[in-house]
Image (cartoon, rainbow, N blue to C red; front, top):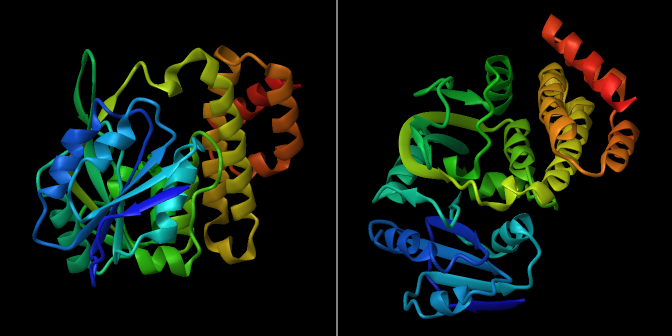
Length: 319
């Protein structure tokens, strides 16, 4: 791994972390936006995860002392974020994607909200857009303008069936993440669900803001929509469901265990959707799901007749 740090600053208020892979065509606009911020001290950590399109050269050509570039062989987006987390120095941390857009001054606005509310984690809103679709809010059922504990937020999200796990919605207090030894689990997909869950299980102070300062662009050509990637996604959902159940079974999470089981059952629906319609290696996925996830554990998440019918359908498909 190659590591290039352009400059050292005594106090960094916000670390912005962006993993990139072959982002030469999209990265410049977002970086320019970020580096226009001069009201607070920031560092921009870009992890070039084995790009082959000259992304690294573009970043190295940007002469700004706030840029930190990590060059590594391709290991995946979560390993890239972990590499940045290990060296970041900011009091707060923001995760972004290279191909999205943000409002001018959004870092300062997020930082102000976090300081004012004395939160450990602030969850913002965003716009979702894509080819042929109108702009829509990423989430609509959050308790905007309110502070609540992580466990209260879990209960709210599970009850409302809205789990805003997107990393680019968050600003996180670094001492909270470090104090709870939070990091991204390895894998290729859906581990942002677990990162956000770990943030909430640690039961810090959450604040929800309806500020839509970010635009998430749905890319139909992205890897997550490729047919040869569906098996990877299905496997990742097995990982997610198994980990949520493990968290539910910890004594320290007794206050939210029921809601974690319900959340696991919800994520199992996503697995079944892929398994029924898209995956190629059904025998391997079926065997792994059955080995790692028990019927009893999933049944603990039942809260409606619909859940009962879903579980019956799931086990019929996997039997």
